[in-house]
Length: 196
Image 1 (cartoon, rainbow, N blue to C red):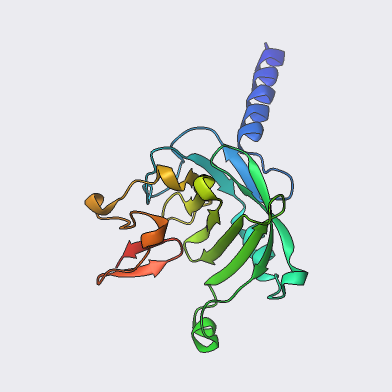
Image 2: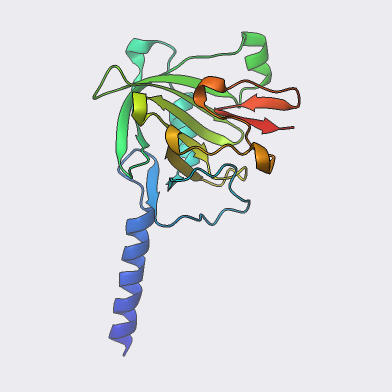
């Protein structure tokens, strides 16, 4: 009887560690299901997406240590909407003037180039809401966004073609990546616009 209980417990732990284990040193873990146990509701809802978990402190430490010199860039692995991973050469590319950046050190921006195809580029940022990415790869372009505003380590990866406008729900008001622009009542944050 005790052996059956211990075996069941061990199998349960193994299953959990398989579905949410971090993939190597890339800070990401796969998550099974369409609803993460986040404290807040999803910020945006693409028609198709995959959920991943992120060791946010490790990611922040890694990104904060990057150089602005392309030649000193490092490798970073990010999840893709097809439940795989892709590696990028990444370096820090500050977007704000120094004075503003000094006032908001929690906002950091980066650029990347895919290791397997130099024509595939990416923009990354890390803010108080967490990590975000836009990968530019033609019809396979995709985004990574926090699952919610809770900054609790859950993220969604989705193809740009699977993005659904949230304007009717009072959320994100972006219809496509080419139309990203703030409206009169919004503040741009990362890869989409949030209501203020």
